[in-house]
Image (cartoon, chains in turn brown, blue):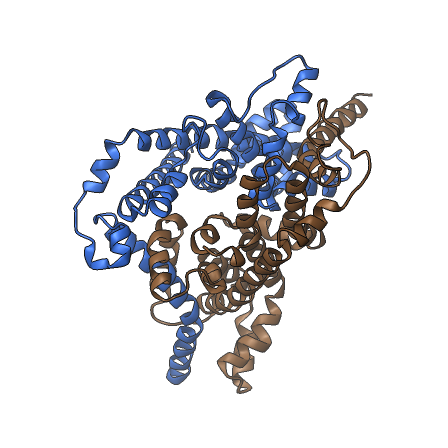
Length: 273
Length: 295
């Protein structure tokens, strides 16, 4: 009897927690499908009286959400691809190649971890302004092109590549780049998937930096556009919820499809912490 | 063999070059430049022509100390991090213990459900919560009314605005910490519990004397990461309150953003950024100290 009671209680607590976690997201979807005005009634409705997609249509036709969606995609995909290349090469070199200066480089990067990104932000803006990169896609993804955490994540994983494997390929006459491309990259594929996911999500969700560097409406990413829209359309609850759904949906879908990589990546990353 | 080593060294630097150039040019150089910026009166005129900027020593820092708004931002940030980060840790630990319990089914579902808010776009969910907090029509006040509480003007009352933002931040953030705690729990050797059970230790004693001490390194990791994140509060007040009402949710980063990118007082904004850096560094060192002493 007692274990059974415990089982019921634990599951009840877990169920309540899951409801609290998911309710805001479920209400967002529900409200986005309500006819105009229905989300602002007392007592509040949980489900739409009739489902309408008019707010989604309005976002794409009147408010050029498609444009922002495209901008976010360009910025996040570019950041992901470039950072995969930069971080994997650097992480591999730090893990597996012997050279003088490896320790100092490692320690310098480690020291960089304690500096919050906001400290670099003001001069970075001036620097990009001088380079003519303010208000460009490149400007928006520049800080994500190589990241210290990404390098460390790769390094940690690459440490487990057997040296014999690399030496054997060297004896066969493979050049260092060949080695990286056809042996190292395939071996570290799981961590590359995790890193790609991390980078895509964090660039897609990023707000402060794109807010600073993008001044022209046509270049806005979704979060920047959404924060602007809520100022003008604060009364249009249903419309804003549709905008939020479109912003959150891609990252939520990616997470659901690839959760194994994501969750294991986080849990593995903490193992050395 | 010597040539192999030289080849390998050359290859290593080539592999490192792209990342080091990017991080050097777009991170380390700006960090050093920020230090320089913070001792100048860099403003709108200097943006037009950098020659207009002058060295002012520590005047920006001295000015900040005399500005009440700076202290408000500092106090608010400490309030948010001081309450929000421990709360996030507590909720995360409770969730981890529940999800990790042996008798639980559908572990994968619960883990994913609790973690889902963490992957969402902060700006979007801040907007969602803004409506949830709406005093007349919002779901939260409607639920509280069922319990006979309220109505609370969550984002319009200076006493409630920060707690409201803390709740949102904890909701979005605890799932990540939960994962780290689960990883920590799974690393505790099962023999420890078996031995304690043989000695007749109850559930609470096992939690107190095995689980908690064994989780100490995890606590440190999670505590440091969470504190660093919470001190950088920005998007929630930007979207939900604009720093109000009565500046009750103005954070350090929001203050820096307004000084730097609204009023273009970049010198002063850089000084704020360095105060934030010092605060985060101090919080990290403090936690390392506490951890070492309790061991």
